[in-house]
Length: 355
Image (cartoon, rainbow, N blue to C red; front, side):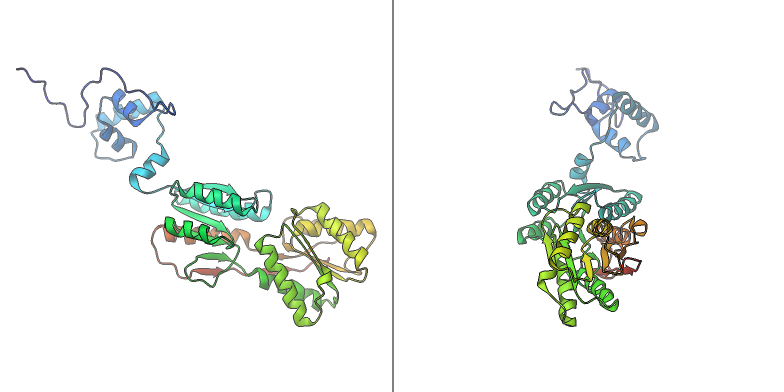
């Protein structure tokens, strides 16, 4: 009986018909590339993944087939095959706030340089939405994850822990050495704002908070503690709104405070959007700032120096937080030692004309 000659190493027997593409997606597969090039799928895989141990002629045929078919590697399939991933997940409350876009851009830059892609999930400050996003992203086995804040249910914390996915929390600090955090103390930052207003001789100081996420409530806690220590806390001088922050809400709460408490002489807004609205309403009402009362914001976003008067605000190191968090996560993903699990980057009060 006549036997067929053995095929060359790495070369597949001539195929009568190219294998069909994935019926589910129509995506060109590695098997399609191998069939066109006349090599084994293993050889095609080696060429596509950049291995140099393939005969130059075979490699050229594979590359030609890749170009002809428009083949693109499937990152998720590669991750499953190698038990590694090339993407990092970042969950933030919103993209419309410069606070988070600055942080996200810093993470993106660091991860891109390290060869990782960033997937972004927007939670909209909704715990149930964050839980769903977290479960969905973790099912794809990301290389790492960055989460905003620390306020999560036991089941969510267990989900992250059981996934064994390296995780870094941003914008807050924790005394738990098992958690990796980069941020600053929201409580201490609020105390610093109140201290500044007291130093300016203000005696009846109000607080306006919106959205009421955990970080806003920590600022409210610091506000209360500082005024209680000074013997000047009045719960009637707090306005807490669950609705999103806006200039309109800042203006509305300014009118409410001045109508109900015409003798207040200081307002601490939990963020700059609200403070901008308050300053604009002061102009409309003809109330001089800071001669009649002081106004202070939080985060020191762009535009504060252009307000009339320029807005005093507590500057948060959002870009630095993004960079440090990315560096910490890269170390965790590489199993490198972490010098400290909690990094406190502090804050700075930017004193301007409004106080």
